[in-house]
Amino acid sequence: MLVNTRAVRIEWGDCDPAGIIFYPRYFALFDACTSALIERALGMTKQDYLKAYDFSGHPLVNTHSRFLVATTFGDDVTIETTVTDIRRSSFDVRHRLFKNGTLAVEGTETRVWVRGDPTNGTMRAAPLPQAVIDRLSQG
Amino acid sequence: MLVNTRAVRIEWGDCDPAGIIFYPRYFALFDACTSALIERALGMTKQDYLKAYDFSGHPLVNTHSRFLVATTFGDDVTIETTVTDIRRSSFDVRHRLFKNGTLAVEGTETRVWVRGDPTNGTMRAAPLPQAVIDRLSQG
Amino acid sequence: MLVNTRAVRIEWGDCDPAGIIFYPRYFALFDACTSALIERALGMTKQDYLKAYDFSGHPLVNTHSRFLVATTFGDDVTIETTVTDIRRSSFDVRHRLFKNGTLAVEGTETRVWVRGDPTNGTMRAAPLPQAVIDRLSQG
Amino acid sequence: MLVNTRAVRIEWGDCDPAGIIFYPRYFALFDACTSALIERALGMTKQDYLKAYDFSGHPLVNTHSRFLVATTFGDDVTIETTVTDIRRSSFDVRHRLFKNGTLAVEGTETRVWVRGDPTNGTMRAAPLPQAVIDRLSQG
Image: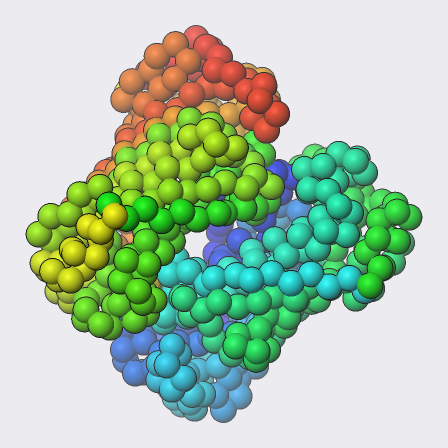
């Protein structure tokens, strides 16, 4: 499977009064990493891939994370993101965040490919296009 | 076990271009709910309970969430938070977020009671004080 | 002019390693207060008023804030929001945040009433409907 | 004066239901740019410069921003940050955010050099060390 790696600086404003990252910020980083992985797989920006495949997005249905080592402002971390499974209309993503080469956070998420408007109840799971499956499955 | 309920308005700025909440915001809401539960159990503010028990906080070691129904700006939701298990130096919290009486999000988390400075590597798990265990265990 | 007042709890996750609120959070609070003021003036939710007046929103063109007293987690503050001027297609809003009755932050902003899609360059300033001007001007 | 330039990707999670950046996110970006400028001027990380000069931080006393061109997810912008004035215990910073070479946002801020604990009322303005003034004044 394709792996995308991002370098991220943890900022002062990402951190809480204990001096460590406020953990919801990890999920914002992970969400950006998932989009970056798909952008790379499909060779287009998220603005473009939403239009090209005429869908509304890939919201989460569940997520699980383990926090092993604390990070703080000034830490330069790397996040490795990969698709670990693809089904008909959903797929799994795994993020591993490393600090100085040590695994600090691991997060997995299941996302659904959706069509329709999520704000008015017409959002529905839709099959992933075969081209997307093929691209995400490439090494 | 003690249950604390909070009413929360989902705001425009909590939502993403699909018009639904950007899911990391749920974790910010959940974190505030955990603190509110402990504040209520101990009868003091977080500022005060960190001092009273001389500890650094209760960071997460893992979290798991399921997203069942999308929420959007203007939604008035309620979040029910309870401690589901208490061990020597860690405890489990469950959040259930309801939209119009329907379970929309369920999140569970394990937190550790810590002493020391998380930014310099001296942070260590510490036993929860018996008074805290007693208060959190009350119905 | 109409004044809307909101009670807000400053949360742990709103604060930075210095222990005080990370100031961008004030702008998120202010944005929610502007929407709440308009919701109250028009007697409908933001979801509804965007549809009723068929417009895209009221983005900022400028903002100016003064930070007088620091706030921290656990602070219960109140924010008074009022429209201070209305022009053909823009209006000014002032927020005053009080901590224990003392003015802690003052923010002013100019917003434009816009139509069209801000993401594709078709966003344009549009005249505020007279009904909106009337309602916002009421005391 | 020293100018520091940062390349930033605007992310999906930075944007609101109108599809454009939620403006409080600009202030989070600007805050990171101010720290990056000082880090570069002093040749050390923020963790280190807070210790080296034994102070609590450089909170804002006021900020003023103009929003000229909307940005959206996928936009790669650059932010030019410079110190525009230095006084005894405060200094002014200007950020200019460019999208495709066009000025999209301009923000100015006044920050104070402080000692003491901002959460217990002992925070006080302190003179900027001469070494800091010298470094920030370099071209």
